[in-house]
Image (cartoon, rainbow, N blue to C red; front, side, top):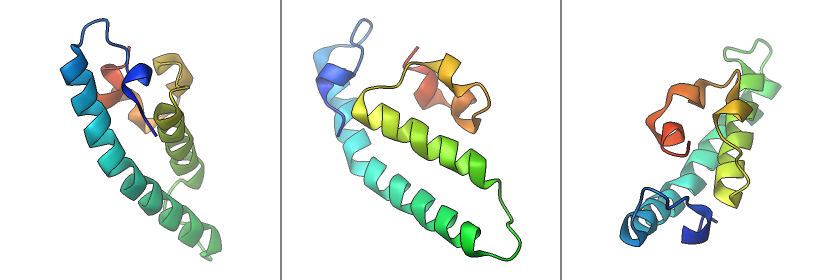
Length: 91
């Protein structure tokens, strides 16, 4: 679970950091559930229709964000999250 201690506040007020935390903690469980469901279904499919490794990377990176262990864009070398607004705000 993300906390305000995990949010870099160099350019954010405490109120802004808390808002990010509140929104993240509301949506992360659903994002995780969707990724888990799609990954599980694709692994069981005869012919995969998505890049499962890519989804697993996204799931891992979101988990790192949630735990506060995310190291930044360098860790996202091949990730679709690289260009997202959310990830850019963590630089």
